[in-house]
Length: 261
Length: 323
Image 1 (spheres, one colour):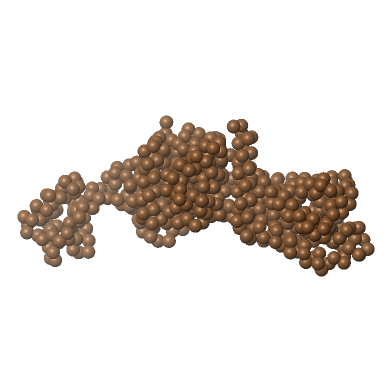
Image 2 (tube, chains in turn orange, cyan):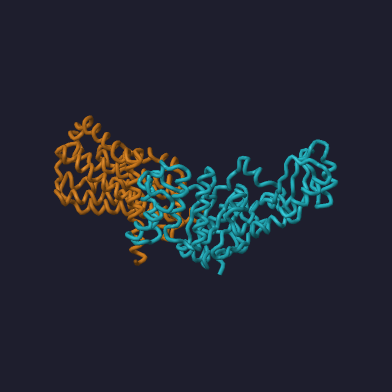
């Protein structure tokens, strides 16, 4: 078996393990599914009249607008949960088992990220299903839905790199868990939950430069309107930016951890 | 060719020098017992030899491969069971062994077959589909050992494999280690238990404060610190007379509790009839007699000035966590 094929097998096996780990540990899965679903229900029920506000984009319903936000929340929390699980592995010495195996050591990080991406995929399908069940129309149809799934999966992968980097650097699950509120700060300072035009300054400016806003808009675009190449490109650019920063940090933290033992 | 060669190996954590230039050689097919108290540098040495920690000085090779320059080749030839069984409590035993098989590059079918065989070997077949978190300490150690064997390693590193286990589980691990060694596997075993090193090891290295203070076969090491001695409990008031009689048979050691007479005997059990005859002829009544052989603890005392067993009993401080 070639080195590449063998590494791909390892990444797949570690990814499968991290998915199993998430589903077997309620404290890891509930932030990805339960919290965002509850928040979606509360916001849709309580703030539905917001669609009437001047400056709100034309949408079929508040749920149609909110789907992308819930996917962003779920995907970011998947990255955070992935980081916590990775830190738990470090704390209990499981990563030593992996580091002692004859595999490229970055494959261990990639395995964790593959699991996080799979959880992003799950989150995208989950919220898409909720939307469809409650009558949301996907303006761009099946292609639009597939595009959303791809974007959310890749975004989970990108944000997962930040959680993994923090886990590798700190080796502490409580440190990674401590960044949980930061997820909400980033979310609320983006256009995930509110249109930028309805935000007050300085939140509006911050939201306009927040990479998450570009990703959220790219995910929302095929749901609420006809396909826009620009939104899509900006979304992918946001994912690439976050992923590149995260991978660089991961690589630095991994090198440090291996050097320090 | 030796399985492990270590020359001047060092590891410092900031100012603290955990391992201070150790040299050792482990022959192919040998069991090497690395004995020392908590914080002596055992785990740090194992982590360097298993490529989990970079040395700050010196060199080491395992199975002919340098641990720094050929780390991945080293990892392909070794099996590792670290101090704390590094197991995921949420995985089942079977899942863990199969994952380990994948990590070691076994094809899926071969990995599944090997996992089943190993679970059978360590007597965990019935518990294979239970989550590891439900296993006892002994079961977890056996599973960890099985995982380390998945690719039939040439050299097996066991870092304190029986710490915290009950006597029955400890014996099971010992039997498994012996069986592996009989099959030709070289075993590098760290332990803080004297009996474990004595029972299992062909060669023993004693480490204290990051330095190897003694090395050799258990018998040779014990031989270095003196001969066995006979310990006698004699009737009240007979101690002085017993010492006078036995003084001609061997070197007298300071009496114990004022009632026990200790005399060194060169030929061990072969000298007991002479001792008994001499006491009988002098009319001294003996309440009990015991032949006491030097232990590795005596070796440890002779080399370091303090007892290993006393440190075992005391709360040991762990080796420093890497910064």
